[in-house]
Length: 259
Image (cartoon, helix red, strand yellow):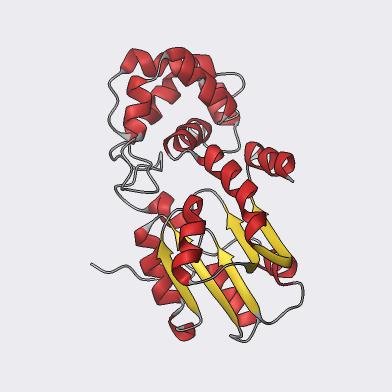
């Protein structure tokens, strides 16, 4: 069954990203390290009247299929690669490109991934604990919650999920309920560890932080971001620009340390 592009899955901060990435230029070669459904690529090509060229890569094959549909009108102006942004150097070599005029990196999960059945990203669905963006990798969320020690789980929930008050209680509850195999079981473990009053007063769902922390570990997100941000400047043309979009303080901290 083919998936159709959904206009409600919109790329974030498009106008801001284009302003800093293009700097008024209408030509050049750009690298979108997290192509997703092609929203930013489409915006770049539209803003440059199709005169720019864009190389897009994404580790998720399913979203690249949607990008192909979304970018149909610009065929020949872009190339898509099913690859992680940590492998951008190999992608550039394959594309025959030595340096680019700009790089865009928009990290985190997309709405498509969160809502896709069977991926295990969402606490709203009852499905296997997976959370892999790259389905060719081996480590899943189930491996993390079932094999990490209580202290390790507490640390990652505290540090990567920013769950300051209840990280230890959540980790203890997870360990006591193991083995966990579904998102519902993980959701219920978090729920059991947190007082009702705390759950109800939170603006975001009470399981959000724990799910985020485990997803970051499964996909080695912080290590990958650090590595790619340190490598990218060597592949920019003179005057080239990097646009990094993040909504997590840890990711933001990496960018500030690197630059």
